[in-house]
Amino acid sequence: DVKVTQSSRYLVKRTGEKVFLECVQDMDHENMFWYRQDPGLGLRLIYFSYDVKMKEKGDIPEGYSVSREKKERFSLILESASTNQTSMYLCASSFGLEPQHFGDGTRLSIL
Amino acid sequence: AQTVTQSQPEMSVQEAETVTLSCTYDTSESDYYLFWYKQPPSRQMILVIRQEAYKQQNATENRFSVNFQKAAKSFSLKISDSQLGDAAMYFCAYRSRKTSYDKVIFGPGTSLSVIP
Image 1 (cartoon, rainbow over the protein chains, first blue to last red):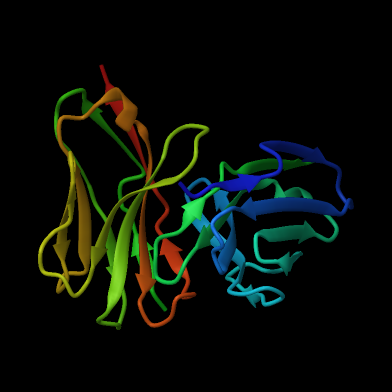
Image 2: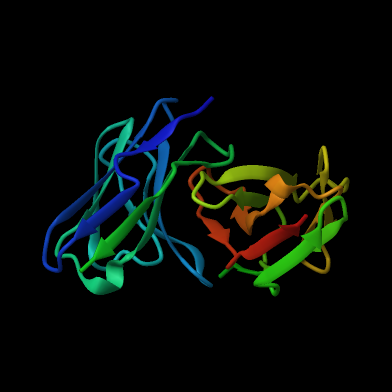
């Protein structure tokens, strides 16, 4: 089975901090994704990557950046955290046209 | 741009009964995938069922089946013999087949409660 692991289930940070969310997949998938999940809005794509060192903006990239130095790892970075970035963050990976596999999510609170 | 709409924010069903969750989408493409994902409380999102647009036959996975109406751009999920473990948030999703890294577009979700 595909395993997508997110480094933290719950995270509390302060405004202005630089925040790193890590995601690792163990199935050699070329595609990786970061979503933000908010009630009533579903999942919104922040960034995705289809190869090492490649990244593409999703629908809501403002205030975020990403890094993919190795194929299995995709990091989401909040450069200067703000309270409106309090949310659930989901990482996913996929191979070709196959469905995405998701991690457990990180519930991030910015105080 | 493609959009996915789920008009029922919340639904409930009696255990062992059948429930149908609605989904409509908008696209100008002819070749795409549609998905239903399930997210139980505090647990991982998992794929329930997938439909390829070029296939006329409705997809089925055990107690889960879809009613895919391509012309109407409708993709509903039917859950038969509902169980307590079916309680979850359900997301309808769309993806083009043009490239392997096309975005998945998710609907806002339907929260399903199962009453014992």
